[in-house]
Length: 130
Image (cartoon, rainbow, N blue to C red; front, side, top):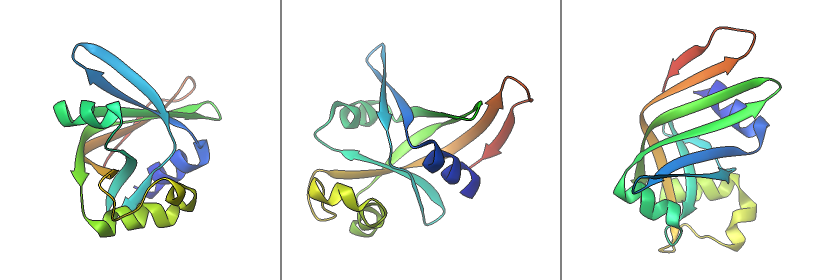
């Protein structure tokens, strides 16, 4: 888990893929944290990505750094607890200008039944169960 988190943080930006009906949607993200042993991301409930995940929680993220890419796939589960939101915002203080652990917009989600795969053009893929 820590290896996955460190890779995502060092890459800086990763891309989250969801579906909107039968149309794939991909957008850049930057928040990733481990809370209570689970990999979390953050968004706002007013965003389309939140609505897409509510309709179909299957998602995948992909990050690339130094010739290696990481894909994490699984289901994203909403966690409305203030503690989970506060943990994310404490680790990304710049988000506190837009989000609060107590507001109705801040959304944190964790990966359930997730698989992380590290790949490159020069080595065999390596899979990690989260």
